[in-house]
Image: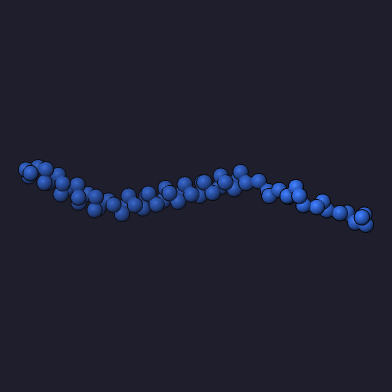
Length: 64
């Protein structure tokens, strides 16, 4: 291995160590934004629960 390759690898390792926390912060931020957008989309599409068809109809009183 010549000195150019070793120097490049050391510079690459130093850059990775220096910028890794920022990269992880941005990844977490993008993922949390995606979760928020996905949850909002699901809430918009949510339909109210439907009554079971086998359930007895509500009686308005007095009839049997």
